[in-house]
Length: 179
Image 1 (cartoon, one colour):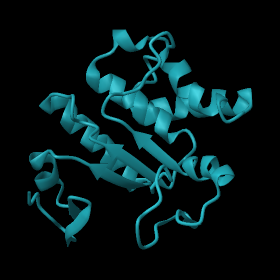
Image 2 (image 1 turned 120 degrees about the horizontal axis):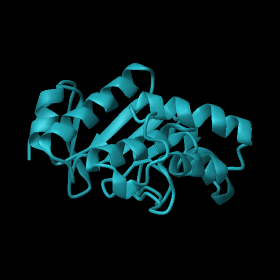
Image 3 (image 1 turned 180 degrees about the horizontal axis):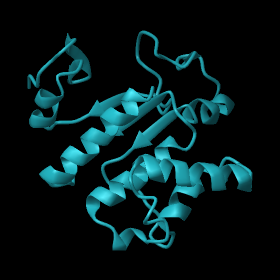
């Protein structure tokens, strides 16, 4: 989906981009339309919460004004606007994951891919992260949640696409965990 690999067959179209035909120089523009949340956070330990989120804009050449406007907005969405000057080691696992989510939102993506976002979290933080992803979906961003957490899948009662060995084996509108 983020054009790391080409599909072996078929087509993948994200925000008007055909992944099977995308040129290498176009990939960064595609990726700005896709937010990615990883299980293992990938935060920069010597940067504050604010700096970690701002970094996603700085690497794309955003002007200082855009950074100073956007970063507090996304930190407010994830409930960390009061922890901008903290470092990752000063945060709980759930708070670190919310920093990652804030960073993924700075470009206002059409699609947010959350790859096992609750895999390293306890049940309380898992619920908070899932609630946050639902809120993000409600404000207009498509959320693709990848998880092996049976309880999360069954409680969401959302569309469930089950993939086994690279093949889609089930696609249910209001699905449940099958494997």
